[in-house]
Figure 1: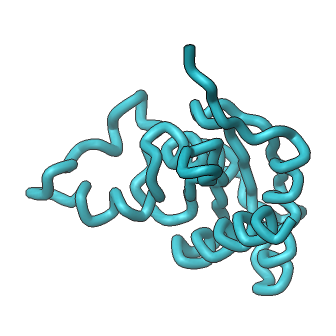
Figure 2: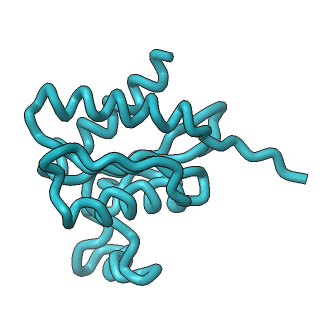
Length: 139
């Protein structure tokens, strides 16, 4: 029998609150998604001004980070022409994201879920996602 670590709704809310606070600080309204360890959506927030197209991107970044068990930006270089994972972005019906902004949430050495952020640059999205993880870790 497996014992699975999984984010709960209160932890998802902490992730979103931390990400939202950082997005406010940098002045970029974001779409923020939190998934469980299997990439299933737990919570979502679209800040006022968050891009409509970023709704799906944020959810898919969280899905990718949880399901692949690694940050989405790590696929960036590996998915370029001639690289080992070239073409992977079209996998799973195009849901696999290869740009920054999706980070797994680790608990006890296991992926318990993920956060995905979209509406800024990949660097801004990644920074805001990390702020969510930092807020969860701070309690």
